[in-house]
Amino acid sequence: MKPVVGATPRVVKSEQEWREKLSGAEYAVLREAGTERPFTGEYTDTKTTGVYECRACGAELFRSDSKFESHCGWPSFFTPLAGESVVLREDRSAGMARTEVLCASCHSHLGHVFEGEGYDTPTDQRYCINSIALRLTPQE
Image (cartoon, rainbow, N blue to C red; front, side):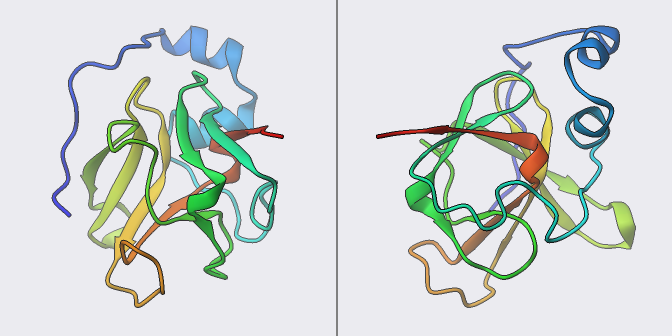
C-alpha cells in the first residue's frame, strides 16, 4: 500500500464554511484529524445494509458489504468503494508512522488504514474509520 494524495479536492470550502456546516465534534475529526473515542461511534456495531458517505460532503466512500468486525472500537472496512473514493497520505503524528485516509472529494480526515494484521478479509487491510466522519444511507 503506497500512500498517494490525489489532486485538489473537488469540494472546496473555507474553514468558516466548514465550521458552519459541521458540528464541533464533526469539525474536530473531519477537518482537524481528530479521533473519536473507541467503542462510542454510531456505526461501530451497525449491520445495516447500505452505503457509507462522507459526513462533510456526501461522497460515497464504503459499502456495508465491505464492513467487518475487527473489535478495534471503530467501524472497519476491507476496501473503499471504487478505489478512487479515498486518498491516502503518510501520517507521522502521535509518534508513529501510519497511513491516513481522506475523502477524495473534500479531503476530510476519515481515519487510518492498516494492513498485514491477519484479518480474514479479501484485502488483509483494515480501513479504521471514525463513525462521526460517516453517514449511512440504508438500502432496501
